[in-house]
Amino acid sequence: MNLLRSLVKSDLRVFGLVFSAIVLVTVIQAVRQPRWYEVIGTLKYHRAMMLAVSEPGPPVEDWNELRVALKSSELIHRVIGRLSEAERTGLIAPYAGPSKQVEIVNVERLIGENQRTSYDRLQGELTIAYRHPDRLLVAQMVNLMLDEGIAYQVRKRIDEAMREVEELKSRAEAQERHVKELTEEMTAFRERSETHTGKSFETGADYVTMQQQLEKEQKMLKTVIQRMRDTTMGFGMDTASWRLSKRAVPPKEDDYLIAPIVVRLSWGFAVAVVGGLLAVGVVNVFTRGRELADNQKEAA
Image (cartoon, rainbow, N blue to C red; front, side, top):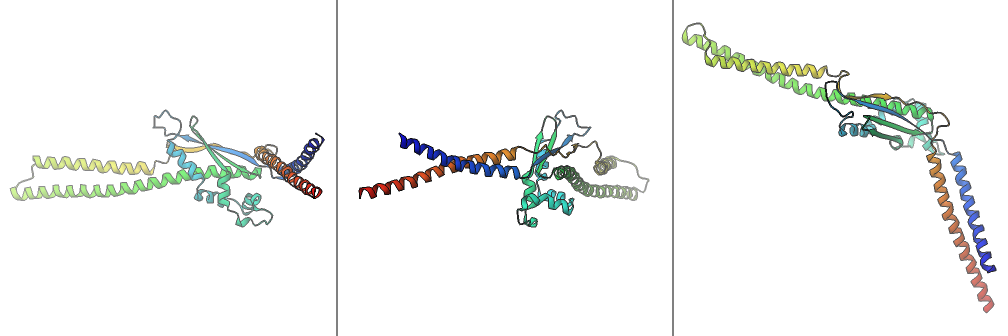
């Protein structure tokens, strides 16, 4: 019984020593690590005034496309390009390590990992969140992402409109040639009739049919031209689009995230428990080995 008690006390001392040492190191590391901040900004989807749709938000593919675009290389490079050299250095400084070789860090990957987007379909709002130890820089990053998100949809709409205009332009030119051909055909028809009869031209059933066809083609030409004008001028505020709803504001110094500290402490506690148990096991193995050797000597 005394031997068992001594073994238990010895195991507890070993476990407590190793556990306390690992927990102490973890606490020191958690206290010394940079404080992380997270801020958010939102974009709200506004439907076109002429569309009578009950749903407040965009189709799923619209907001999902914008969400993917916010993590794309093109948009991230645009955001980085709007930062000063000092801001770019500060952006990646927490990941550079002791070597301070910030130029070898994959900035695009870091921005993508620390950016978070979510969508509230009921409110029709897309939320952009970003995490960084610099509380001023993190707000600026979110605001730049909001601006680039809006600029992305504007560029997309312009590109789509230009493609549509080019297509309508080709249709208008083809329609104009068709109208011209019909006009020339009607003129030739009149001239042939006057030459054949030797009299002034009198409208007949065939000519009336041609005239009706010409009016129809002219009307189609006017419709295509009007669509070109509407498409060219259709970038006003009455079009469906994402617009700024809430800009990011720098958080206060005390408003840092607790989660990274808790996660680090949790992992440290788990490692401390495992380390303590392993230390007890190793000590017991050596102790039993020494006892076995002593017993063999006594038997000899």
